[in-house]
Amino acid sequence: DDQQNALVANTAACTVTPNSTPTTSGYADICIGNTPQKGTIYGIDIRQRSTLRAFKQSIFTNTLAGDHDFGAGWHLMWLGNYTQSKDDRSVVGEIAWDSPSTRSLRPTVAYDFSDPNRSRLQLFTTNQLSGPTRFQAGTAVTAIDTFAKTPSSLTVLDAIDTTDAYTAKLVLSRRMQFLGADATFKVGFQFDQRTKIADENQLVVGGNSATRAADFATIGLPQDYNQFALSVPFLGRLPMDYTFRYFDTDQMRAVTKAARANFAFSPVTGNNYNVREQVLAGYLMGTLKYDWGSVLGGVRVENVKNRGSAIKQINGTPGDLVVAESSQTLFFPSLHINYNVDATKKLRLSFNSGAARADYDQLRPNIVISDTNQTISSGNPDVKPERAYGVDAYFEWYMRPQGYLSVGAFYKKVNDVLYRQTRKYGATDLDVGVNLRSTYDFSRITNGGDGRVFGVEAAAQLQLEPWTKSLGLPDWMGGFGVSANLTLNDSQVTKPAIGLVPARKVRLPGTSDMVYNIGGYYEKYGLSLRLQYQNRSKWLDGIADDLTDAGDTYWAADDEMDFSARYAFTKNFEVFFDATNLLNQPGRRFSDPGSLLRATGIPSPDTSAQTIEWERFGRRYAGGVRINF
Figure 1 (cartoon, rainbow, N blue to C red):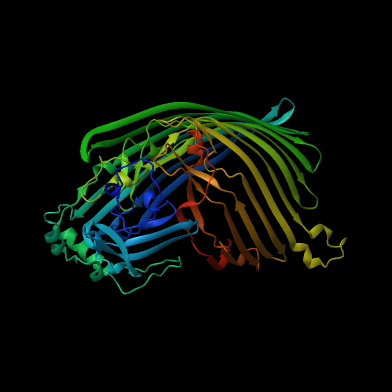
Figure 2 (figure 1 turned 30 degrees about the vertical axis):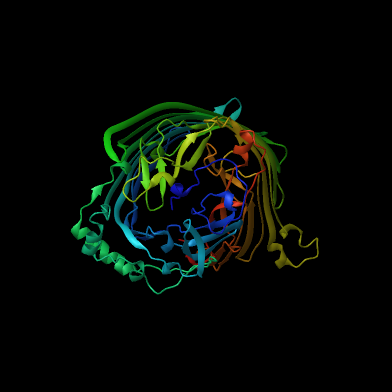
C-alpha cells in the first residue's frame, strides 16, 4: 500500500511517545513508537494479486561441423550453428483485489521484523474513534480473507521473446618444430549474431473506473474475493501468523476466456524491443612444449556491435522510435608458463585478460515494466564492458600412485565494474490507472569504478588406496577418500559519487570473502558414494545509489550438502541415486545501509537484520538407471 499520503507532514525531531490511538495510520511515524523493525500501522490497504501462469519454452538448434587433417601437421576445424529459442512469459490472468477506501474496513497490522529469519505480522480489525478522529486496533484476526476485497483490474498477457542466433567458427592449426620445441600454432575466427525480439500484448479489464462494475459483470468476475476462492488452506511450509485461501483457477480461466471474447488486446509498446549483437572475433595462439614444461601465449581480438530499438514512453504515451548503436574493439592477450619441478610437481604462472559484457538485451533503449512482480527493469545502451587483467601462480603436486595437492595465489585488476543498480522508482510518470508504479523496484545494469580482487586457493584429494597394506587395513577400505578446497578473497571497488553520496568503497559484486568445499567419498568395485558440503560467506548483490533506499543488498552466508550414489554393473549399465540440498537452509537477501551512511559522514556499523527476501526450496531426490552405448 502506498502510505505517502498518511505520512506526518512535520519532519522536525520529536519526543517518542507510544500512542495506540493515533490520528494517522502510523506509517513511518517514529513519534508514536514505531520503528523500521517493530510497530503498528492502522487501517492499511490490502493489495492482493491472484496470478495464473501457463507457458511453453522451446529451443530449436542444429549444428554442422567438420574436422580435417591434411598435409604435414595441418588440421582444420569448422562449425556452423543456428538456434532459435522462444521464451514464453504469458500470464493466463491476473486479478488485483483492493480493500475499500474506508479505513475502519481495513486491517490494523502489528509487525515485528526483529528476527531476520521470521517476519511476524498480527492482524486486527480497525476501530475508528472520534473527538478527534483516531484509530485503534480492535479484535485479533487470523483469516485475512475476512476483510473485504473487491477487484480493481483483470490483466491477460500474451508475451513471447524470440531469439535467433547464428554462429560460424573456423580454426586452422599446424604442428611443427619451433625454437627447439614441439609447437602447435592456431589461428581462429568466429562470428556470432544474436537477435532478440520482445513482443507483449495485454488485455486489461477494469482500467476505466466508470465502467468497471459493468465490465466485470460482463466477464462474470465476482465483486467479493471469497466468491472467487477455494476452501483450501496454505499448502506451503513457511511459518505464518495469518491464513488465506487460494483462488479458483477454473474461475480464473473462465473469466479470462470471457475477457478475450469481449475485449481487445493492445500492444505493450513500452515493453517491446528489438536488440541485436554481432561479435567478430579472431585469435592467434601458440603452444611450445619442452622437457622442462610448456609455454602458451596468444591474443584474441573482438569487435562487438550492438543495436537496439524501442518506442520511447512519455507519461505512459508512446512516443518516437529510439535506436541506440555502439561498436567497440577489444584485445585480450595472455601468457601461461608451466614448469615441471619434477615428475610429480608443477609450477604454473599466468598472465590473463578478459572482459565481461552486459547481456545484449540489457543494452535495449527502453524500460520494461512488470505489474505482476512490481518491478521496473531499465536497459542501458551506454554501459561498457567490465575489463580485467590478472596474474596468478599455482603449485601442484600429483601424488603417486594417486592423490592431488594444490596451492595458489591470484591478483586481478578490474575496470568499469558491472553491477546491478537498485532503488525504488520514486516517480509517478509511469503510473497508469490502478498501477501506481512509484514504489516499484527499479533496477538496471551499469558501470561502477575500478577495483581489484586478490586471494589464495588450496585444494586436495586423497584416497586410502595406496596405503591400506602399510596401515594394516583390509583391501576394501582403500576406496575411502577425501576432497577439499578453500578460496579466500579480498575485493574492493570504487563506487562513483552520485548526488549527495560521495565515492565509496564496496565489495566486488558476487564475490564472497570465503568459499570452501569438503567431502568424503568411496570408490571401489564399481561403487561410487559421495557426500559433499559447501559453504560461502555473504556476497554483494546490488549497490544502492543514495539514502532513499534501504542500502546495498547482500545474500547471506549459505551452506549446502549433496549426496550421490552410483553402482556400475558393467561399463554400459549403472544405477544411480542423487539427494541434493540436504540441509535445506534458507536463502536470505538483506539490505545494509552501513556503507552509505559512513560515506555521508554518519558513523554506522554493518547490519544484516533487514531481510528483504527469504526462500527455501526443499530437499530434492532423483534416481534411475543409466545406459551407455
